[in-house]
Amino acid sequence: MTAQSHPRRAADPRKPAVRSETREGRRRLSSPLLLGAIALFGASMVASADPPAGAAASEGFGSADGEQSGTRAVITDLRHTGNTVTLKFIIYNDSSAGIGMGGELNADGYHGYRNVSGVHLVDSAGKKKYFAVKDSEGNCECSDNIGDVAPKSQVSLWVRFPAPPDSVAKVAVQIPHFIPVDDVPIK
Image (cartoon, rainbow, N blue to C red; front, side):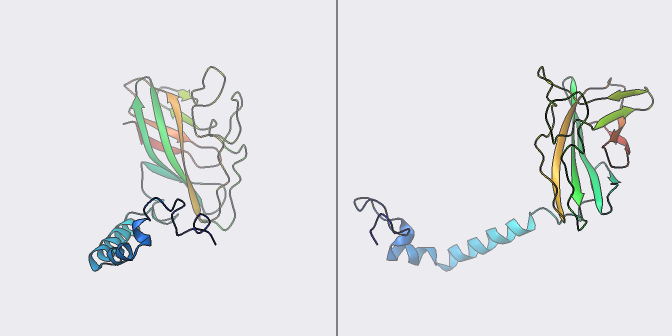
């Protein structure tokens, strides 16, 4: 095996070897201080990892069960920015079957497929329904090309809407195939 084809050796013998490939480098990499730092860093990564699929399902600004048993939508944010509001939500699939996202959340009148253009905001007091913003080509300003949601997993999604008047503090969020989530505050 040549130096160029060996994965642990430098490709050019004129260049110095990578520190971990020398005796001194291996000794330094195995020092107790470095190993302690790796252990601490690794522990912090585990502690900050996302919770399992169902663990955070009760958090957020509201949640709703889906038509498919073991599925849930959680509203994580509804934020006013300029003349739009952006909705962020997570779909949890704690069931043993996948959720097919092919057109399940789409609405008519938008280009694209596997997006969340069918999600709406409703101002009950003002009797107004807000549809997803679309660009000049008819594409939804939202999550697009969404893959199926595997069993025991989750997917984070977003969609942008025209902003309701400043007097509207809360709206209902309607996600197709999920119970509506009422009284979601606009931040």
